[in-house]
Amino acid sequence: MELFRAAVFHTPDNPFHFPLGDRRELICHEDGGLLVRNGRVVACGSYADIRDANPGAATVDWRGGILLPGLIDAHVHFPQVRVIGAMGRTLLDWLDAVALPEESRMADVAYAEDTARFFLHALASHGTTTALVFGAHFAGATALLLEAAARSGLRIASGLVLSDRQLRPDLHTTPERAYRESTELIDRYHKRGRLLYAVTPRFAYSATESMLEVCQQLMTEHSDVRLQTHINENATEVAALARLFPWAADYLAIYERYQLSGNRSVMAHNVHATPSEIDRLAAAGTAVAHCPGSNAALGSGNFPLRRHVHAGVTCALGTDVGGGVGFGILKEGLQAYLMQRLAPDPQTLNAARLLYMATRAGAKALGLEAEIGDFKPGKAADFVYLRPPEGSVLDAVVRHAPDPAQALAAVFMLAGPESVREVRVEGDIVFAAGA
Ligand SMILES: [Zn+2]
Image 1 (tube, rainbow, N blue to C red):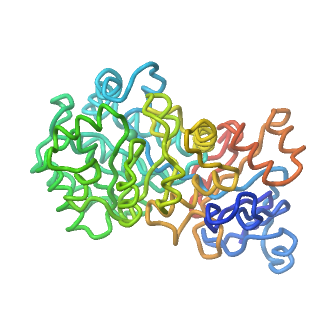
Image 2: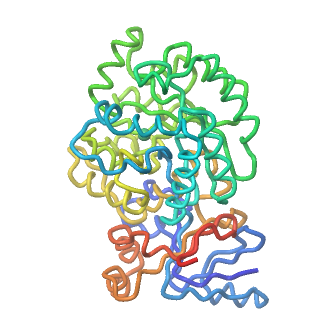
Image 3: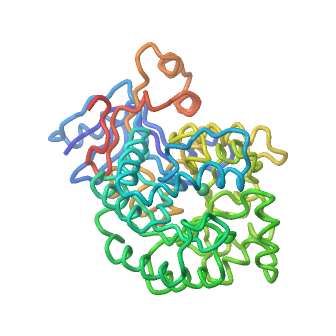
């Protein structure tokens, strides 16, 4: 048994259910202990109490550091890691000019394998332990990602990206081939170790009705695979969808017709959602991946977070690399906070709410809330150990924070990968600084 000693934070209860600043919204143990046996959480609380009750446990002394549940990235594209940072474009022209040419390079398996390894290291080194990942448009490259993910120890849900119109021809497949290759990948990788398969229609814009039918069939034939896609990201895209699917009352109605909305689905963005769509997502249990960095970078718009929260839609955070601004889920939380400060109908955020969106909400979005997302006894010991570099601004602010919630707020404001010391999944080290 190992007893990790640090300041421990988690949000086992949804902080949006409490008034802002209510003491129940954030569990914090300033001199805390996290007791782990065989990769599972045995206890989380005050260090002294846990040590006294478990004299045989070996203490790992991380005093001065901070322990958070492993961060969860609910929307990220592995083939786009090398094209982060394009400026001045909007979604459809960014796809054509920046993202899709790079995604075409994944036809080269050596290039894809190198990209996959780099991508997974980038996740882990930023404290991300679980991610819902868009694979490639090529089955070979997607298989390489899943193989590398299995070796990495991270929890990865991913799948072959499916499109059969509107993109570059080399990224298109046929519904028949999409069905065959997806089925093979599901059989090989779904629930292998920590992997999950996610059926991945890129977005309705690049999928014919036959392709969406194939997605429906895959979801029906495999009762516990996940689904990921995009929705209501950009106003031009939404207008185009109305022309491509003239029978559909709105964007969500397209996915609904093929039974692709539900509690196994995570839809990214939903910036331009109608009130009806938000209500229907909530009723279906579909989660939304909120990607504020990408929404700002591509000028997509300001996410109506308050309306989603009010309706009861689970909103997790996604970095949306490479449309987004990097791999840091903590930074994504800060971006969510900043954009809501300027939103016309703002949702006030604080450290507890950001931590929830970065951990527990992501677990719920992926249907993994019984396994990960907080430090309740019995859950997997997925955690990130943060220690601000000595002499850094974050170090100074944390040391002088008047209370733990302020220290956690400073972590969201200031912590980058330089503060990530060690990352574990089910107790296994998946990243250690300097190793
Ligand atoms: Zn995306």
